[in-house]
Image (cartoon, rainbow, N blue to C red; front, side, top):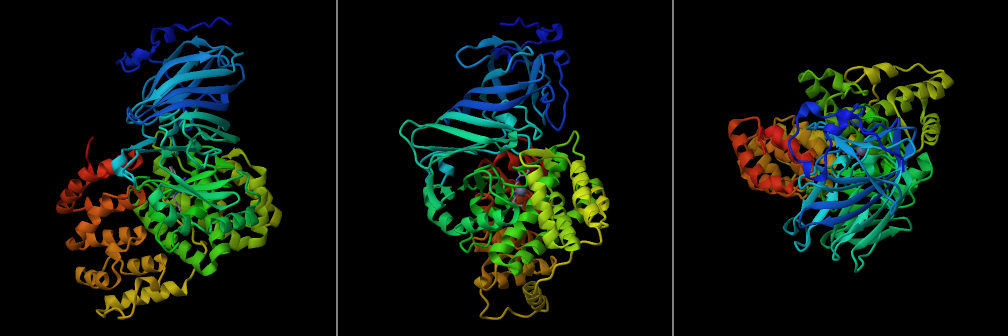
Length: 625
Ligand code: BES
Ligand code: ZN
């Protein structure tokens, strides 16, 4: 075994397991270079394969075990990993069974990034084994007690890695720039099923031991785990749905078109390279609509509207199997490469499966939101956050999760499509995905690639720089129209003019997006009396449709429509999806009286939310926990 020399400054601050939580003299702590929100020294040494051996302990709300990294070592004498809210027990070098303990240090803790875990090794070392356990409040982990799950019998656990939370449940070089394959051996309570973003079981076994494999290299933010009481229904040879038993029938019905979506996506941009596409319906606390964990998309149950009207989120997560999971943003500043391409691709899938009229309505609803977001960002003095290429240095990558990356990104691509023609654009996109599969990409590389392979080739002038490095929405943005939206807007005008709704009008007469266009057409100018009249006939407040309810509730708060507070409260105590919570609490925070009521509700509701959501709402309401 090679002798390891420990530099003096590291020796001074050496941590042992018991010392992890002991306050240290901060100045003595070594620091590591930060790049792309990570301390990982991937240019010198990087993970090629990760093997996890973990016990899932619901009682102590902790994952404990070992992360075995197989490294590509370019001659490094230390390997730096990211950790946050993780206890390190020991670090060893060498293959399993022939390991020797090595020294390590933990650098200065940063409340956003966590700390660097600096492991001493030699240039010949390829195997680093980190023995660790997670802390109760690890941000990625949502440990739901049995009372908060569907059956109320068993607890549930799921992870959310994107953007920089994987480091709170696994010690990794937590940057999207590096890719690795992974495998895992997990032990969970025997009544529960464990699933990962990898090969998955479809049934429980008696031992509670499950093994997983992800053969395609992925960035760290796509590592994912869910453990709960779960049933499985197959939808086609290579797709299916997991959900808690009380939701499995509804989920199977709602998402029955997944096989058609996969066919449509493959027809557009080439073979699906992840073998299986399953989805899992998580508990209501899940902070997002969906998360594109490879082979196993995570979904919010709020998509189950009963009429399939919110399935575009599944098309979105499926599209990430190309844009994002195959071709990955190199840093969070390039996030639009993931999300803009995905929203564009999502819309193409929707058009293939449901037709152009539906797809255009979806895009128009998003465009309305983009315009609002641009106005808000400008008003906040965040002009530069309306560029596609972001500068998130020293900031939370979450700040980049706005409609800019998503919708401005997608409309940029739609506008190019309109300019060059769909046929040529699709040829370009197919080549783009092929050329960069299993790679990461920066915005600058993308610009080079599209200039060379599309604009110069086809001799086309396009204001690419204005779109990517400029403010707001460029004036050549594609214009979309919808006759059905015009009808919805005329209906709103009728109500505005003091007329009643046609007596035979029912909510089922229009799809979700038409009702959103209807609500938005009031531009906030709907009186409380008119809201009561609309609710009497259309029952928005109890529609069970989360998109309509959240939009309606925001308007209700603004209009002092206090009669719907029980419904708003019930919603806030059930749904943890940040996209809905954020506008609701933001509106509540606007007047003293509503803020007070909002804080009271939040006190009860906060335990139902994932850390991603409650951190955001804490800030909005100005509460400290
Ligand atoms: N990858 C995102 C979710 C995400 C982004 C999580 C950044 C953490 C950091 C996912 O694909 C997504 O965009 N979800 C959207 C749905 C969509 C249809 C726009 C959501 O959750 O609302
Ligand atoms: Zn997305």
